[in-house]
Image (cartoon, rainbow over all chains, first blue to last red; front, side, top):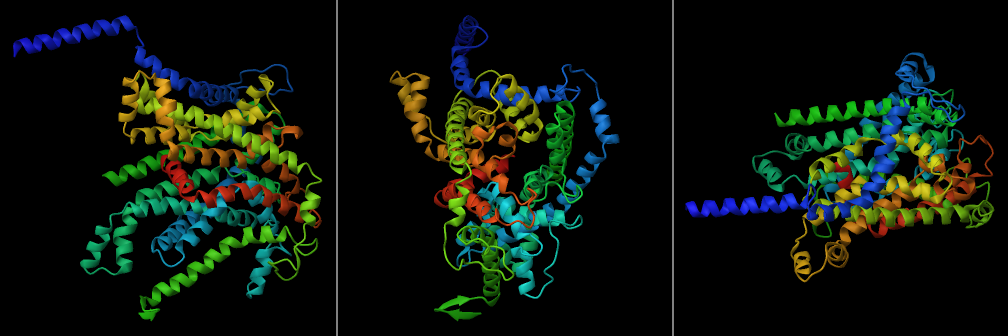
Length: 312
Length: 282
């Protein structure tokens, strides 16, 4: 017994010596790093460096048109939050858009997933049809929906009129309607991702749970309300957060369909960031970007809290 | 309950099915309208009564749209997407393999850092990226459009998970036979990673093909891609009431949409698995 322990200790010591000879990084480490290097070079140069550089930039008055760049501390942030009407309006517009799109995307995504999961005749075709728009570029969505939402000749208003509903809604040319019009196009575009995430969640629910509820005498609605939906909550939180972050970054649709108008009503945060970039206010635009990141981090934090609540 | 073709059908399910099919049909209308309208004669696209089918199929819109440099945009998009996909595959397969098969100093910290960057939107880093590309004299090149998106955390994640779930006996056998780590990777591990390669390639290609914001910042007229180029037909471009660009715009949009739609229809399972994985991770 004692001999065995001694032998093991001796072996460990000799191993430590070998390790020491190899230096801080062992040969094994070096092989691993050789596999990591191609990724690391691109990652450091085009993700990590721009992130840190952008953070620094947001504390400067950098503009390529001006020769010198000064460190100006929090001036950009203070200016944006207190004195920039256009930014504050763009933030309001973006939140308004979020309120319109995000709940609809979660609820409709859930409903479609529940429908597909019933596996009625042709459900594969339905799944394909609901998901297909997700693979399109925002350019396709912007061009097609820009014309569909046209007030006088657009397909939507003509179709509404054809079935006897009011067909003269100025979807894109009225300040109260424009975000609803853009929201419709976004819903059509991104409902597929909500649906497939909910479907993945539904497939993770063991069939026995629902069967047990049925044996205990629950009807279809009771199973849905008391078994399926509570178990889908974590996926629901995820879908909600993803849709929220996605909506906070909206830019392409207004750029294609409305130029941020009418009267700036569809100028969003990223749109404002882009306009500042165009007038080469790089430091200022970077600060807007980091404010957006702060909002997104807060959203992510809310998700963590919501999931923690599930565990307790 | 009623019987159709000898099968029991619930009335509630039948009602649900009718509604489901109706919504499915509505969801396909924008794309169907886009494709059919691109073959309509000018003046037939926006009419007082909604018209889905053209009275006759004509190629007018396609013939006029090719007077714009559409062919060049299409070639640029193809080169950026193929080049970007290959680079993404190479760097994420090697890094994913490293995270799955080796233990090394700083592994967990590096992986955590990688996943943490998923939360940072591209919009935050694009301005310093633009200044970096200017400094490297790369603005206006196709390379500038490829580089920023190639180091994809999602790609690394997909490859790492694949190799973790895959038995390493074959690789061990190759190592005993005297094959080096890189030889084993290229000859044994990578050829077996087909599902992961497909998932990352699809996500990469579609991402590059559809990219709009970064090309808007960094491309030149020579390197304009399809997704950016067709913005000259955007409804917001200030020609409200002038419909002569409408047919051309829809023809160009059809050309832009077809490649990704085809990929989706052919490789649907891999596509949905890929976006589900990246979504669940995000």
